[in-house]
Every structure is written in structure tokens, then in C-alpha cells.
Length: 232
Image 1: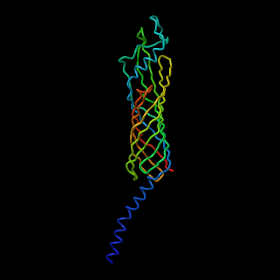
Image 2 (image 1 turned 90 degrees about the vertical axis):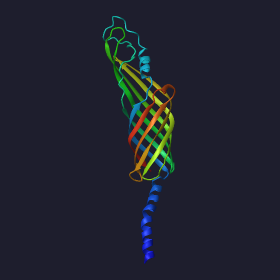
Image 3 (image 1 turned 60 degrees about the horizontal axis):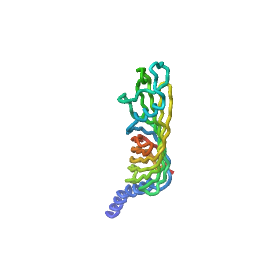
């Protein structure tokens, strides 16, 4: 009788652990997945003002008798106020879990990055004009995604390399001009997956995107507030 009770108690205590181990194995199974999410971005730009001045310098200087509607280059921004702030974008990824503790992933992140407006003056006459700059980027990287745990909550790190495509647009006094750049970029970050079911995964993550070459001063921080993935 005592042995029967002891055996029943042991089974009752061990059953949840066995079930948990089986669940962990199922959640960390190998196989493909896809996902989408929204992101917030904060810039780490170095010389946006220099880029704006270079862009506008393509236009001729204003004569002394300029009219208010004439298009011409403005005075360099110098210490003019620049209002930078957080911005938003979209994120998508497709990957394959090759091991319970490692996934390989392709990620594409579009960001409408930190446009700003500044009230500047036209050279030579002090007329005010509105200057607007918009910077859009698309960063595509191949990522290594190591996992630290294999339960329902799975924290991970992220390191990737790929390309950044940039559109740098300037609008001033009715004049529009866009520059396009592309170059090598890297991504470093981390986050956590939460398995709502064996197939539906919610995630949060953050990363630092580092540009090189012609996009060397377009670094930014990306915060994925909520992502949704499907595991096949």
C-alpha cells in the first residue's frame, strides 16, 4: 500500500516535468518560419546638415534683386534648429531553425527615417523658406540567430550582414531633389520570442544598424515593439 502511494506520488510529481520537456522539444523543433512586425527607429546620424548643404549647393546663388518666388540655394544650415525624432517602419523575415539553439534568417526592414523641417533663409535677402528632408532606408540582412533557452519564452541574440539602400530627399522652396545610395550594412541586436502556441509566436526585439561606405553616417537603432511569426 505504501509502495503504491509512493509510486503514484512520484508519477504525479514527474508528469509535469516530462510534459514540459516534451513541450520544450516541440517549441524548439527545426523547420521554417515567416514573420512580420512594426518597428520604431531612432537615428544616430553624424552629418545630415553637411549632406543637405551639399545637395542644395547644386543650385545657383541668388542675385541681390531676387524675387520671393525665385528658386535658389539657401544659406548653409549652420546652427539652424533641426528637429529629429523617432520614426516608424515595417519589418519582415523568413528563416529556418537548423538547431534548437540556432536559426538562420533573412530580414528586410524598411524605415522612413527621421525627416526634419527647418526654417532657413535664402542667400542674400533674408527671405524665409521651409526646408524639409526625408530619409528612407531599406536594410536587407542575412542573420545568425542563436537562442539561449528553448521553453515557451526564448531569448535570442541577432547578428547580420547585408545591404542598406537609402533615398535622401530634399524639398526647398518648391525644389525637389533625391539622392540614392547603397552600401554594406550590419545589424547587432537581440530580443525574445513568446510561443502562444506551437505555431504562433509573438516577439519583441531591438537592434543597432551600422552602415558603411556611402551610408556610413546612417546608423540607427531599431526597436521591434511587436512581431508575429508563424512556425510551420
